[in-house]
Structures are given as C-alpha cells and as structure tokens.
Length: 628
Image (cartoon, rainbow, N blue to C red; front, side, top):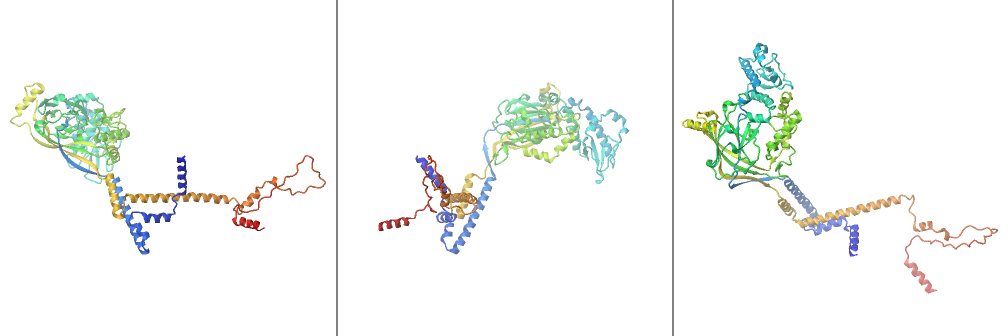
C-alpha cells in the first residue's frame, strides 16, 4: 500500500515538473553552481555583468574546443612504439634451400624441344636483324628448311616482336616470323599477345617463361617433382651444432618458382630445434651441389642456391624474401632476431590468424600459418580465375579450377599481363589483405669467401664425390658446390611493440585539466550542469503537453458557432419535461376518462447562472428573520 502511495506521488511530481520557469532555473543555477563565472553574472553590476558574461562565454568555448581536440585525438587510436632488448635461448629458424633452376634439363628436354628450337631460330633472326644500322626481318620463305622444321603454333599464340625506335614518331613493329611489317601505331591484337623487345634480354626471358609455363602446367605434379633436383643429389653434407644430419632431416615441398625445395627445422612433425649458443660452431652447416651443367639454358640465367630464413610452420616465399648463395663460395649468414608486436583493432588493421580476412588462403593445403604474402597471392589467383577463367601456374589452385595453357585458354597470356599491370586489381588485393599482428623477422649479415681453396679442392672434391656416389673419381667441380654457415650472431633479440598512445585515463585527466584550468570546475560542476539540462528538458516536455491540451480545447470550442452556453442554459436544455406543468388548456366539454390519473405537479428549474454560493446573501436573510 505504501508503495502504491509513493508511486502515485511520483507520478504527480512528474506531471508537475520541476516547478520553475526557464528564467528561474537559470538564475538558480548561476547563484548556486560551483563553477566560476556564472555567479558573477547575476551578482555584479550591469557593466560587470556584461564583462563576466563574455568572459564566461569565451572560456566555455575554449573548453569545448579543447575537449573536441582531445576526443578526436583519442578516437584516432594512435600508437607509440617501444624497443626493448632481451636475452634468452631462441628457436633456430626454419631454413629453406632451393636450386635456382626448377628442373633438370635432361628430364624436361623432351617437353621443351619445340620451344627451344623456336627460341634458337628467333635468336638467330634477332641477331640477323640487328646486323647493320637498320632493322629488317628476313622473310619466312627465304629459309624453307627453318620453316619446315619449326612448329609456329607456339609462336602464333604468343609472338615476340621487335620495335625499331630509331624514329620515335614512326616506330616499326617487326614480327620475326612474318613477311609483312607494321607501321607506326600498329599493336599486336589482344588474341595474340606480344612482348616488345628493344634490346633488353629480360623481355626475352619473360616470353620464354610464359611459353614454358603453358607447357609445364599440363604436366602432373608428381611428374614435375620427379623432374626436379632430388634431396640425396643436392644435399651432400649437413651438420647442426655438433650433431650430424642428412637430407632425411629436411621436409620436401614443391615450389612453382624453384621446383623441389627442402626445409630444415620446419616444425611440422616435430618440435623446433633450440640453439644452445651463438656463433658459427653452433649453427647449421650445409654443402650443396646445384649441378649447374644441367640447367635449362633459356629458362634460368642465374646460377646458385636460393635460400630463406623464416618462422616455423610458415610458407617460404623465396621470390620475395629469399637470397642467393653463389657457387664456389662459402657463405656465412649471421642472424639477428626482431620480434614485432602490433596492436589489433581499432589501433591497426592487423589479424592474428587470418580468420577475419575476406580472401580464402590457398596455402592452407600446406598447413602453414597466415602471412600477407600468402593472402596477396591467393587474392591474385582468385582475380585470375574471375577474369581469365583459369589459374596461374605459379600459385595454388582453388577447387575446381585448372591451370592456364595455350590450348584451352588461348588468351590467357594477354589476360595475365593485363591483370598483373592493373593498379585497380592490385589495390583491391592490398585493401583486402592484412598484416599479421605478431611477426618474427630475421636480419642477416652475409659474408662470402672462395671455397674450396685451390690447395684443398682436390681432396675435398674426392671425399664429397665418394660420399655421394661411392666414386673414386672426382664428379664435382667448383661451379656446382656451395657451402653455407647459418648461425645466431648473439642471443640478444629486439622486441618492437606497440602500445596505445591515448587511453581512457589520459582522456579523462585531460578533459578535467582543461575544464579546471579555464572554468575552475570539477566533476560535481558537470553533474550540476547535467541536472539543469534535465530540468530544462522536463519543463519543455510539460509545456509541450500543456500546449497540446490547449490546442485540443480550442478545437472543441470551435464546434460551437456562438459563445459557449452557460450552466443555466445547459440545465434548462436538460430539464425533465415530466415534472413541468402542462401549458395546454383542456376544453370544458371534454370529460376525462374514469381511469385517467390526475397530472403530477411539475418542478420549475432553478434560475441561476452559477453554482457558486454567495455567503453574504445567507447572512442578510438570517438577519431579516431575526429582525422580524
């Protein structure tokens, strides 16, 4: 019952509102607030009131301006980086080694035979066209033997042209195996993409790579692995610290750029190795045989081994982050470790494991961790399939997609070149992919020396030849041998971590400092100001409700054409006619029926215009009675 009474009282209080007008509330606030300035506005004289009003308005504006800057700074979520140096035993990095040539030429010669013959003829014609000052391609029918033994099907799919730019305004485009020449402004059509060559050998390499990619993409994966360099032939000796190792301690993967690659300490099947001490004696030592004499002549122009240091369970992208080790040398690589720790959303757009990235990671088939390189390549392969209808040979395939080749996809080379040079598609992949929040980078210090020396190469080559194939003859030479030393320079590691530059504590203290400096206020002053705002709003609501009621009443009065009736008029309009006298006169000759009842006397209606009682009338009547 008490709760009901209290609830009714609260409702009455809400209906009543604060009970002040706007002016009264404002005067009360200025007179009772603890904020400096408003009190002086109402207590000082007229001139000082104006001065204090403008000073209060000015400093209040400064407070709100500073608050806006502070809140904007906080919502920008800026970070500060800190560098710390630690000392501990560390995991030895995963080491990936590959040959610069993806395949042995002796095993792929039959697949590239027609392409090599076409390449030799094209080179011969290029040299002929370069002879003298002018560029002129010999007509095809001038050498019937060449035309008979060459299959120009590959050439027609992806032709190679020469551009004579001796006259920049009228360049001449020459197809090496066509008799007609094109004048200025002529470009190869889209269905037969062409690579222009103005003398740079890199363009010729790209043309050969496109042609060989189309041929090798139709070869099954196991066959491509068999055509590459096998671990027992490539890894001659291995030593980790004081423990011997062999090619069996390496994990083999197939890399589209480099063929068979071998990873030491990848951590997929066993725990990662821990380095006991820094220095070359406690690192990894390898001796590799790259068999340079079996390189594909037109595909690989670089001789050596490609290697990369990376984290465990991460895919090696040697084309981006790998380094070359030169044959006939001993390459020493000192390693320093940098650990990067980035803050996640909303401070940076990084990801922990790639689960929030909209691009499907095609490298998950290797069970490797997420990396931005894997995301960019997966995105490009998805764009390749969307625009060209097939997948590129250098990247993993999505489910249900085939590699591009000249027979099934005649325009794939042009589509690939256009997509690769498209800034819009490249920017789309950059915007879709994210950096990893935690990353480990290996900084390398590289030094090289000739190995083996002239004095020791005889016995070293004898021993290595015997260990590889039990031969007493020397089957190795300086052009194919590489020695690697990979070790930690020191156990000091650097951690570069991010922290929030602005926190909620910083924001509150800065807001309070600005408010206290300019207005001399505190949190209680803000509560007072909030209370006044609530009262202002409630008064506004009460006024709106009253205005709506008045409007409704005006609409009701508008229903009457004249002034509203008085109370007496309303009473007369609702008088019971059964209690009134009959004004009609009964004729004398009309005799009422015996059973009829006599008419009941009526009661006249009161004659007053108001229900208010005048007490003076009662007093006068009483005095009259007493007097009588």
